[in-house]
Length: 323
Length: 248
Image 1 (cartoon, chains in turn purple, orange):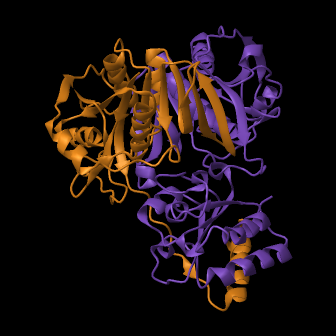
Image 2 (cartoon, rainbow over the protein chains, first blue to last red):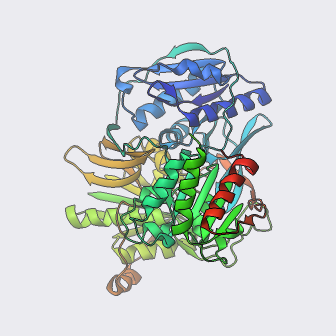
Image 3 (tube, each protein chain N blue to C red):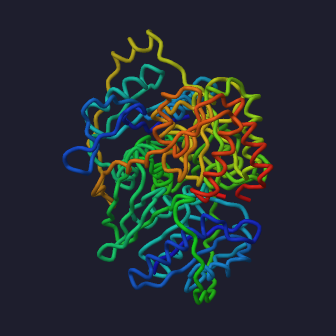
């Protein structure tokens, strides 16, 4: 069996989980194996939706003490489900939770792990994973020797495809609550906007923005396009009061949006590493020789302080955007 | 308090990646090697705890003789002891197993590491090590404190941070923003030269994974420049994104 660890938010399947499930379905078909979806929590209401993405079976591990995320308790529940169901492949989204729990579950299972993968295949009955290394400057193909193979799928890379599965639900036993660490509180930014790693549109600024206040221009464009704002390391390290959490690049986030608009970013190698897998790249820079133009599908040589407000105005007038 | 910091030697972020003749590894020619940036935040946090609460800080790294540079640098920054686990293991589970075999029974209260090793980018040795030792973990941590009950850590999640509280011992993996690492002083560098690096044969099992191919990303198609004044460029871009790229 191929088992996919799925996450719910407000009773709905998270998008990165639908992507992992869809890829799991494709692999299950290729290998002639059933696909199981696994949910862990105090309530797993909404888990039945996994059947829409091809799950033949939906497994739930429900217990009041699983209301808050605990890496050791969740890893134990996940590894327990793999063993109970005899799964040989375990997948999950490379989300904050997936990247925290699945390597731990892999170690518990004595299984190999490949993180943040961008392509998967079944070769001779075993998983094979392709994943960006050196922050996307190269791609490595990883083969497994362990009996169980574990991987997390990078958000925004695998297409979510609806395909009806049987989706019979089965409750599994919850592990005892031996919690070594547990989440006590979530400190949300409260913007309601998607995370950089899951956003369809990113409007990013670099040193050319000249100040943190000027990022308001990018916020306005991002709002018009239904996107979020990112920044280069140069901008984050410039002391403009920008959060490290919005940094794109080798020491920040690696992103794969549909559209990446780089404003006043020259295109240092470590920045390019973090965004070069974006589907469409737009560069706005006054220096026609800036390396970022080599990557851009569309280049605008000009003053971003003139171009960006014009873009915002035109986008609003045209009523376009990914919403 | 006893603290262990796991360090990894990685290619500099400015490295232009070239594939070696074997088709599955990095061509080491012209590569400058550094301590993985995230590990610098890990070491800094350990050193700050040493200064504020008193602690003995041991640094450890897996690899060959070249890794001694990373360990020597950590000694210069203020680590008390350094251990080289001699191994050519690269699979995360094998590395975590070797680290666990070393750390077990040595009484470390905290084990710090970077949230990922720059380059390999698997972000898995920390949580694997915590599981193998049967202890708590908090990963991608941007704020950390030792409390009466154990520890409190803030870690990055989608759209914010979450507060993790747990018992010691624990594995904590550092993210940018946790602190601002110090530079080595001349005095520290001189003192580090006199310290010995303990060398231990690592007990790493065969890897559960192996890289069988390394390729460079496909070149992106040639783009085009949009002409005119700012308003014309803006309109041309939105039309292209809408009609050609069909983004909207």
